[in-house]
Length: 106
Length: 122
Image (spheres, rainbow over the protein chains, first blue to last red):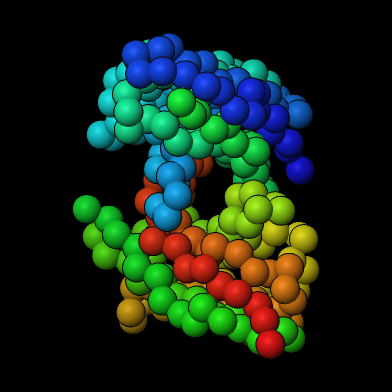
């Protein structure tokens, strides 16, 4: 199975900050990587698919980049509603697996 | 707007079968598998988010399951009700988790059910 390692596991930030989260894959997954936002009591919400494609309705302050084994999610200017956990997921082959998550907190 | 609505018991006894259903609105469980597949995922503190399996239609019905679950898992479509189900046999406390159904398009989970917290306990 492909392993996804996220860093950092948590980050402290303030409203207006630029935040970058990294996801590394254990093998080449081309651009088959997605990013999700998780909040307690709610289902994960898709932000980015195919490494850099913004999902419908997601604010443009979210962006994704990378290919192969290294990917990043960037929040250009953190908003109060962005404090959450962010997880990556590969779609290269089965089984789809997820990273361990990065908690963005104040 | 596509929505997934989950239903099923929240408490299951050890060794029994966990059964959940996911009703689809705004899409069809019979949508070509090149466009969408229908999946089950669970989340627990010990294992994080874990993909369990999927069903999809491409001239015939197909299924893929996580190898870690062996022969315990079955995912079935129900075209008459436009829904799909999860059955997990011989459950143990390690199967206690928050279970989600979700649609995959473009190899990402773009629509999710509301989640069902299932506890395995006597």
